[in-house]
Image (cartoon, rainbow, N blue to C red):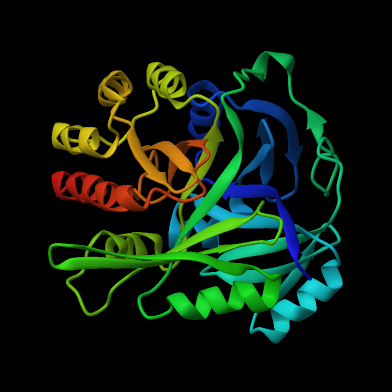
Amino acid sequence: MPVHDTAHIELYTSHAPPTIDYFVSGMGFTRVADRVEADRSSILLRQGETRLIVTSGRGIWKFLDQHGDGIADIALTCDDVTETRDAALAAGAESFAPAYGNPVVSGFGSVTHTLVPHPRDPDAWPAGPAWEPAPVAQNAETGRVRLLDHVAVCVEGNALKDYADYYGAAFGMSPYSSEYVAVGDQAMDSIVVRSASGRVTFTLVAPDPTKSPGQLDAFLDRNGGPGVQHLAFLVDEIIPAVREFRDRGVEFLSTPDTYYEMLADRFTGMRERIAELRATRILADRDEWGYLLQLFSRSPYERNTLFFELIQRQGSRGFGSANIRALYEAVERDRLAAG
């Protein structure tokens, strides 16, 4: 039953060319292969251990109509796909038509999980109709992204524990940490669940329904319900990655100077390093194991839902608890500025 890894993530989009350009030209992914079916076409992207499938076409219009561009499926590798499917159904999941021979079960909102046997060849293409190698000219890999660090999922208020319990019962994932953040008259709650392998991590976030509506409520409204809020990509060196991605057109959330004034008190003896972080607007946090650096992009999509994170870990096993407030405030400033 336990899941081991993320095989791939599938993103549905109404406009494939700008979406592909964002990942390839902006973030340095490589276009590996193309697949054309009767009612949709898909493009396989890869960088490091991260594999994204970008799908467009008339066969996905219901998802796009309800949610806009966003993550539709997170494929998980597991010891026994039948056993995992049965555990998910017993935990309350809905079963869908198999995807090219692999079982598919519900996750959160309209997001599904395709169950893939473990282990699998990391260089193998996903199952399905024949993939055709992409033209060499489409390759633009820079190697900044190593792997998918975690997936942040926004769910309804009062449903957080139910989802955490579901991922435990269905996929053998365990609670790892939790955080409650209040900003003014708004608040959010979170539970992190992780596989025993440490290779699959979901950060579940939800608005506090007893507080005033805020950005998570706005996300749920724009997204038509629960969905993936952001994908976090692990990089070895975040400062050159952010500079490169900015030069390639990726926009990141801004961080006020006051953040770095307070950071100097938390990171004593790192004055020169903090100056670099200020110049690139990168966030920093530390825990008992080390520290991490992270920065969040603006959403490149029309509904302003899905966005991305770059994260560099220097021993830290956490998720930037001290930065959750900074992220919340940064997104709130963008939300208010947008009216």
